Length: 546
Image: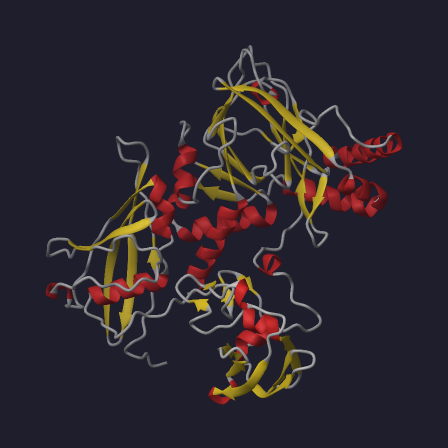
């Protein structure tokens, strides 16, 4: 297939160096971009520097010349035009460019978020490949059509065109008849609210800019036209505004039956539930590869979302290695136990995890309104004797099993509110955390979204009627039997260099007892948020797709 001169294909690779000395943990990234513009090919690497979330420098240096900076100061959006002058010595497309990217931990995510469109434009002008305007961003958001970073929300709508349109003023609806057959209707208010013209939709931020104060129940449409060979509809509203809507965009959002899945579900990966069969099949990842390869990082994130647990190996048995990996993800969740926490035996523990005793299967921090979504436990030193084994069970799988064997018990655990509390002192600061939630927490669609299971921090205050308390305990003990069944559990004694990463909303974890007087066991832990992790997974999947 012949390539047009103004087309470019981009592939991005990343390498992360060891942390720099001084100033805390740092990271060095190399963005290597291969751009092909017929008939010649150029290979180069681009440097990105950020400060407080804004891109402050793009540096390009040829192997045979001094580095040249293209400053981009206080850019609020990755789609901002590149307006820096281009030195003449970079117009030779046969030159090989080499550039290093440096960024601090706080700005790592900002550097990653520089999207493919901005990279393409900066790269193109750096090698003398010019266009009259920057290329439009290839990644699309909720107002655009197609597949967004792994979120497929179309039903064979590619190439949808309109055969005819009719206004229905009494019902205040627009009826659209499709060329391929069938028709759909759209409410006037919805159309006005989601107008795609430049006055109502902000392209660079991909956000609706029309204000609610501009909407009225008395809104009506004066005229409607089909344009661009059936690919667009233009609506003249009675208030004088001209609205525009692409055919495919409308088809994607049709109010037809059966309804599309909610967008939040479309953007999730399908979970796979498990039991003891995962004992020897826990997904694995290499710490070194996660720091060096976007494809390895993507596979890790997808396994984590699908199965809820990944074992990372070859992590240096030293403290703060979690920070290095977090640099590639986003940020840690801070709790009253700190940013990171050391799971060791303490003389005067404020948490049973800080003892050598056994820990019942549980999820962490159900006493928080927004409990951590993901937990990481890095083994630095393991107790050499018997005990200290980590136990895991799939709480979602157990809940689904309960719904099958006893729907009444499932209903009880999903509707009865339970109090959880954590009171103590950490680092000289007092804390008193308290929240109320059911053991099996459902979302608005009736899907399991969270298992709040923690025998240690469940409060003795139980604000339910007497008979309801008895029924709850019956259901609770049956659920206990399911998760502790040998067909549900997997057990592993972590070794120094192992890093266990698991979904804290789904996976229940515990520990077998060990004699802390006879040896030491040291784990360092931290938390991530699912919003951050899922976002990065979609971004990486979108970049891989393009």
